[in-house]
Amino acid sequence: MPLTLAPMIELSRKQDGSQDTAAFARDVADGLSQQQKTLPSRYFYDGAGSRLFQQIMDLPEYYLTRSEFEVLTNNRQTMAEHFAREGFFHLIDLGAGDALKTKILLRELARQQSVFDYVPVDISGDAMLELSSSLQEELPEVKVEAVVGEYFQALEWLQEHKAERKVVLFLGSNIGNFEYQESLEFLGSVRSYLQAGDRLLMGVDLRKNPDVILNAYDDAAGVTAAFNLNLLHRINRELGGDFKVEQFCHHAIYNPLEGVMRSFLVSKVEQQVQIRETGKTFSFEAWEAIHTENSHKYTLRQVEELGSACGFKVETVFYDSQRGFADVLFTVS
Ligand code: TRP
Image (tube, rainbow, N blue to C red; front, side, top):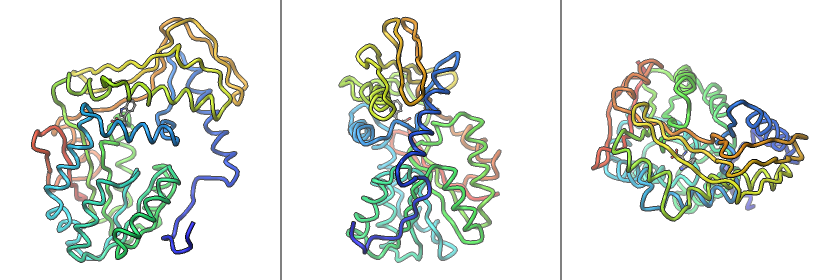
């Protein structure tokens, strides 16, 4: 690693990875011990999972990334002007990943010669290293301070910089992966560390034809299935599990009344699975399901209500041309 890399804070990892493995084992054991089995979606993104998710974003069916790309491209100038209105600010990017979308804004902010620094936050240390070095090449004038950690560590960062001006990015409809109550708590916490003049730009996937939504989470080429099933491979690799992955299948359903897309891994046969690091064996009945992810789709009114319940008011709503996706700019109320 070159010494010239932007400063980097390692918040979440122990050097030997022991904390990660123990926490992963505990979360898996908890989830698989419940009446209705679940596995937490934050474990999707190991190396293999991140590569599969990159492929998902390129799928013809997965409209979300392209739609938001269009929103940001078409509105970057207005967005950047809003951000920089009150002078210097920290731009905090929650779940930055490769920041392909955020770079649209970063280039525009640099073009407008805005005074800011960029704080990408992500659970993937590899992603943050790559992002720091790619930005140093592409946009050397932008000061970057990457944070490796989960959302609650992002909140700690916000708290520590409470008095300074901030614009928080929460793109990609990541908010949709929270339960409604969790989204209230999370946005409420973000809000509590913001002050007058600060802003939140949040990506939300809007209600649309249910077939379009369903296909985005159950693509013809089976990439989403592979992505979901990779969670079992990861448990085998990292926790000494003996999942026979071919005996599980991916299943996705969309409920248009609730606006919730749900993804499952379903056991095709009655079977037992041993996971060494948990010290436990888990029994599956034939066709028993593990719930792995929820993705909420919103009406605009719901987004406004969610914001106002957390102390935000809508400043501007930016849509894609199909009106299927929105980036909503909030100020504090
Ligand atoms: N969390 C993302 C989303 O809701 C990623 C994702 C795409 C996903 N397809 C998935 C998560 C299938 C679980 C299962 O869009």
